[in-house]
Every structure is written in C-alpha cells, then in structure tokens.
Image (cartoon, rainbow, N blue to C red; front, side, top):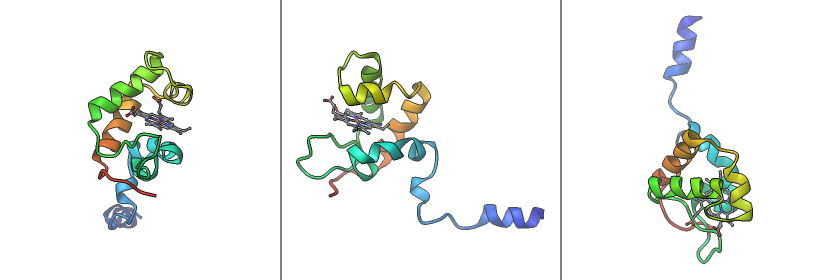
Length: 102
Ligand code: HEC
C-alpha cells in the first residue's frame, strides 16, 4: 500500500506540469480574457500578462481591488483574491514565457 503510494508520488510529472500549483489553479479563470497563460493575440485590447514583472502585476491587482485603478471587470475580479493569492497569480504569470497567442 505504502509502496504503491510512493510509486504514484515518484511517477513522472504529467505533460501539464507547468500548469500545476496554486498560481496555475488561480490563473485558470483569467485565461478567458487574458489568453492562455497570459498570452493574448497581437493587438488585443486586453493586456497580456505573461513574462511581466511579478511586483508590477501584484500591485496592479491590488490597485483594482482597492478601486485606486478603476475597471468594471478587473475591480470585480480582484476583490475575489487576498494578498497571498495575488502574489501567487503575479508570480505564476511572471514565470510564463511572454509572447502572443491567438
Ligand atoms: C472578464 C474579462 C477578464 C478576466 C476574466 C480577467 N481580466 Fe484582467 N483585465 C481585463 C481587462 C478588460 C483589463 C484592462 C482593464 C483596464 O482598463 O485597466 C484587465 C487588466 C488586467 C491587469 C492590468 C494589466 C495592465 O497592463 O494594465 C492585470 C494585472 C490583470 N488584468 C490580471 C488578471 C488576473 C490575474 C485575472 C484572473 C484572476 C484576470 N485579470 C481576469 C479583463 C479580464
């Protein structure tokens, strides 16, 4: 039983390994607007998030949450996350390769 459990733990990471963890889980709902892993189509009116400074992303999220930066969509969304979740989101997007994606 224990051995089987250990085997599961030792199994190679699935192909979606880069989508694992808190940041990825939290970021999933962002993809609808900000593109897969924060990469938007070229010329998109919605800003891309991939590969940007984590500190900048976290402070933008905090500004939406406080209302300091007004946005109908992001204000509502940002209020759903606490500081540590915002930090996890910011770090996850910062770690994604930048670029554009259709
Ligand atoms: C319903 C669509 C929508 C969803 C879902 C959404 N966003 Fe946004 N986001 C926007 C729009 C639109 C803007 C531009 C708002 C503005 O004018 O400041 C924006 C802006 C941002 C910015 C500021 C980028 C910049 O350069 O100014 C950040 C950071 C951000 N979103 C993070 C997130 C995160 C993290 C999530 C998921 C938790 C998320 N967004 C989900 C629509 C969305």
